[in-house]
Length: 267
Image 1: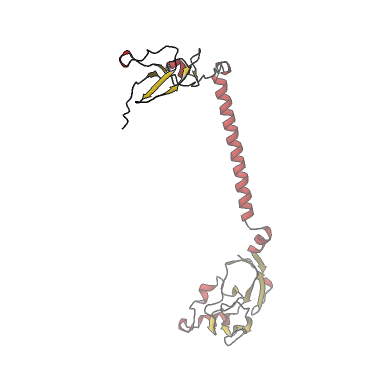
Image 2 (image 1 turned 60 degrees about the horizontal axis):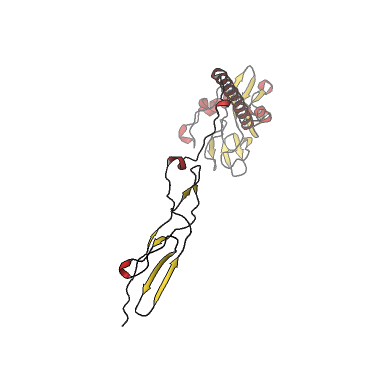
């Protein structure tokens, strides 16, 4: 059996991991330095030479094998001084600084005020445009109200006008027709409503000519009750425009109107 033993352990010094230049800035790593001494008198080896490379020897009973590591780099120490770390330099802007702060403040206030006025004017114009687009056009406003001269309508006759795309029935009622409307019991009505509650001036009947069943236009002075009759589905209305017979669920609608010196204003 062969017995191996470590004959000698060489001593070496690692080179600095970083070096510094003359101005204190760290330089790149150049390598490791294995400066060494080897051998001693006890094991009958020659003492090491300063100019010799590092030698590590493994010795056995028959032969000696040597592995050599060389590095010509001298030993350097790593510097951690503040001079080497302070590499950031901030430019000096003092020559550009204004000597008078009052003028700068006045200019800043002027710019802020001007921008505020411009923004307010722009916002006002935008809101005005939006509202003008959302509002009704001139032709729609013209149809919002209708004025009719009713002085030419004789007593006991009907007139039909167009308002907002719908027919409006106007009748100059006689006293007998008003009495007939008042004589109807509320229990007989499908949609109970007094004649006096429907019209401001009793002799003038004003209501929309649209059947409350399916929107047809009833015929005047017809039906079983002497008022209006819808031939589409057989709805009958009395002289006050109240539903009396047929599928119509409610009375004919009375629009908002006013009477003034022989003029009727609807809407």
